[in-house]
Image (tube, rainbow, N blue to C red; front, side, top):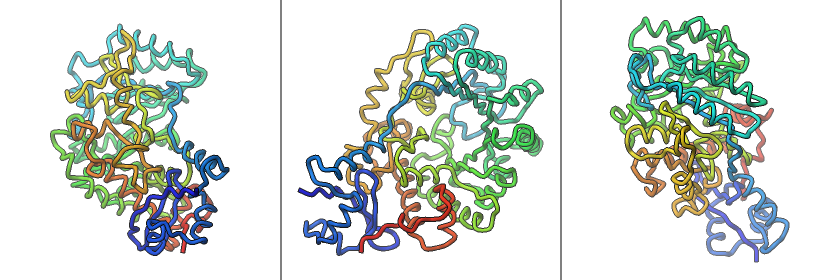
Amino acid sequence: MTVFPLKFKPAADGGFFFADDAGGYFKSDEDFLSRYVSDTLSGSDREFLLRGGHAFEEPGDLAYAGFEFRFASRLYVPGPLDYIILVPTLRCNLACGYCQVSRVNENTPGFDWNADTVEAVIAFLGGISAPKMKIEFQGGEPTLRLDILSRIRDFCRSRFDQCEFVVCTNLQNLTDEIWDFLSLPDVFVSTSLDGDVSTHEFQRTFESRRTAQFVNNLDAAIARLGNGKVSALPTINPHRPPDPKSVIEAYTSRGMHSIYLRPVNFQGFARKRYDAHASSSIWNNYHSRFIDELVEYNWRAETPAEEYYFVHCLRRILRAGHNGHVDLRNPNVVGHGYVVIDHDGKIYPTDEARMVSRVGQFDLSMGDVFNGMSTATIDALNQEASNNFHPDCVHCAYQAFCGVDLVDDLSRYGRIDVPKHQTDFCQRHFAMFDKIFAMIYSDDPKVRKSMAIWAGVPNFDPSLARWHR
């Protein structure tokens, strides 16, 4: 018996979009859809589906083995624990209204690692068997505890064969000692530039003097450290977004050509000021306009630019194994490949999980560095971390490219069983995949140029826009 495991949806530009469980896709018309659902496929239909890997004979034929291999290649398998987010302090020298981690003021005592916590963290790191390690310092503002950062770096360099350190800093106040640390060859900087400078001031610095201080430090960091060691991303308020052109100009003029747009995260202090249930359509429209503006920019620019997450989703469609982003995996297993150690020594499976716990919604901690780590609570959560058998996902044509984010659902809705199509995660990604496939099937040479750049190929391959006529 020949099996044709297809899912389908209307395409915005006409016809119907079809996809199989392994991520193969094509477009066709309503006549083919009628033949498919009525089990009256023609000989040419069957030949097309078999040749494209969308069908197979059960049991045991070669086409079936190939289909299963492609299906399995899209699944995320956690690796060893080799990525740790460390939060040595919650104190911060800024007071951003959208702060997702519920930071405290710079002079507030009791929100730093003490000496015992530092030693316990080092003991925890010493028990990790992976040969390489990536440490990301977050806060608060982690440079307020440069002594701890230096201690952790020195230990890791003596313990692991290969190390990388990322300092997530607002770059607001930089001393000579901080510059020396950031200039080390294995240290990288991640900061925030909230679109254009005026938006940055409105959301973060609140006064021109502090804005100028940040801009000078950002430009100095790029000049002193190089673009390869400095990354920045904008946090966008969907209800008051900066003009896409101004964002692209603010980044590309500084030699930064990968822009990761992020809407305000419904966590921490942002819960009090932003509506978690009324922004997905507004965000999707803004993001789509931003992509269109990037297409125009790339048509004439010598050095092209990208929106990081759009490109990530595009590459998940085009090839298996693209699981580098922790928010979009299937299954999205948490608490295994990386963990977060908070300012009080508690261990969390994700950065968002520590935020959910901090505001008192749910305790998603996995123990602490003093008494050890337990995955009992997280393992229960991970039982629902796959979309393969989820009743709201099994008929979705985008299932093979998508994932789940249970922690985001818990944060927004207080539960994980909200119908998926009602969740912010689903609505944002459904719109994202709609946009990507509309561009894959576009004949516009400007679109095809950017799609080739973002796919990492010299020229757009027309065979990516597969049709069955």
